[in-house]
Image (cartoon, rainbow over all chains, first blue to last red):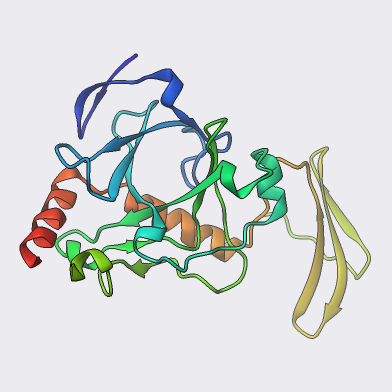
Length: 150
Length: 77
């Protein structure tokens, strides 16, 4: 299926690789299907795009939080794991949405309070709202980034 | 907004599937019990709003923004 996106031009959507959010993302509950794309010409970068397969103009920058915060270990409520049929931590992966302040990209932050839980087998996902104050809504990514230090 | 007054132990029913019960009132804190279908999301209002707003903000990112970031990143090395 082809989608003419505003950021990436025309792309091919492989149905088998779409990630399905039965409830969508908070604020975007009608949008259920997404695919993950590398940034054009930057397949090795840890920041990628979560592009909507239904709305060509909607996309989010995402990343593996462990690349920036190796100690990130949110407690996911049982109810969420059950909803996605996740029984084992090896079946799941957590990704987070990154906000890039316009004009100050170095101040980009990751939303650690509303991570996305993905069932690797079924490719179903959900944005989880963490109870408790342990992780922030905006965690600056570039402060002590190991990648920068290298 | 529908406004009702309830006492401890009383409840409110929303549609067929959602029930809210006032369990306990202590000072200015109210303990609320919520019965809803498993797939109905229940969130603390202010947290929900914050995450929703952050999502909306995040959705404005363009490939130019990220490109600029990568450039900065590799320049710093």
